[in-house]
Amino acid sequence: MSTDPSNKEISSLGLLETSRQLYRAVEVVTVASVVLIVLGLVLPLMRNHRIEKDIVRARLNLRAIAAATRRFLDDTGLGPCRDAQGRDRGLFWLIGPGEPPTGVRSMLDGQWGRLEDHLHKNLPGLRPYEGWRGPYLHTPTEDPWGRAYLVVLYPMFIEDDRDCIVISAGPNGRLESGYSSPRDLIAAGDDLIEVIFDKSAARSLPYF
Image (cartoon, helix red, strand yellow):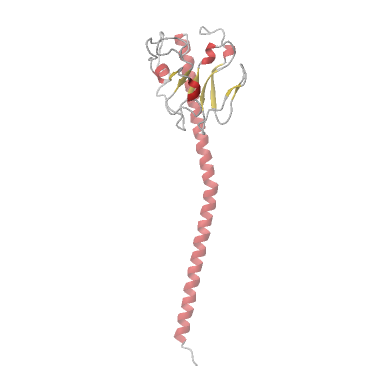
């Protein structure tokens, strides 16, 4: 029984085409694997770079708020803590724009004001501040993660050396820091903190 040479040629061409397709498939899988490996290396670096960039921006904002609060104190002779009824020590906290950090609402207890009403505008309530020369802070903003900056004012009113601070809850949005004693502020988690002034070194200032 003889074999048609044309059938052999067709069979050979079919095997050759199949080999080419397999080779292309291997190439595609290899390239895709390389791309996935590169992405696996690059994406965490990009994410870390973005986090670091956001942290730098948040620290700059914290310093700006702290500096604005110090200028306010110098001009008015008291803290930015006048409440809507006109009481000079009516507020314990100032909160910037954005969602309050997780865990903050329960401890504010109503004694808080909007940061922009004191450092950006002179609108604390019934009694504007005497000596106010602001705005001390232009365009108050939320932190890079959409949370509000928090200015802690109540250490001005208590007889110990707790520092007055401004704080961001950081990337995770949870406020985790606190005072471990009447003197020691413990920064915890990924919170970012800027000291407005060292209270123990500020006893000679007129607002203490």
